[in-house]
Length: 278
Image (cartoon, rainbow, N blue to C red):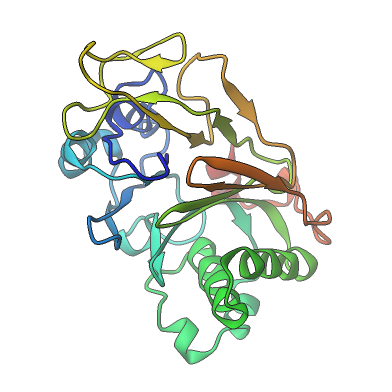
């Protein structure tokens, strides 16, 4: 979620929505993470290798953390054991990152990295190696969008991919990629959320808006999610290959990718991969 600037709480989406992250964690119990940006615009994250509904820190932070941007993730392990270092979101070079899907060829990805790039990796997941390579390409090119596009193009051309759905956030900007069409990724048009200084997002929504006390000023926000978190009709499914940029509250889409050169099907997955991606 991002508001483009004003700081709010994300309690509704994380805890109270009909299909909140806490509710989803009963099906995806292998890791929980919440990332946000501090008052100094530095990325902060808290992770644990347990289900969100069992994680007291996640539930407390969901009610009290105030930020303009949040990335949260609940994990069903496919590559890498349940471990704090394998839980999303990841942080590199002042960016937050989360991934849904499977990318094969971690050894090849590793060969594309320098020792400096590799030093940022703490776990064993394909997701973190993908992020390290994206981060390396951003450094080389000096531009986040160009680096992200270049990295995904090379991964798609050279490595087997089942799904590469990505959320990448830096202070003030958020990128979302649905690639190819294996998994869904949804976005809401900006609706109103409660101000962080006075409320949390916990009162529920009515006709696309979070219900707030009449004297409080609501704040527009954009929300992206692998599953629609409630039944609001404003959710839109991203197209296959769509790279959505939310800059402030301005959203724009690019379609810079060809189809994967080595697509994986469900039949190609291992038992653990298949269960995690179901």
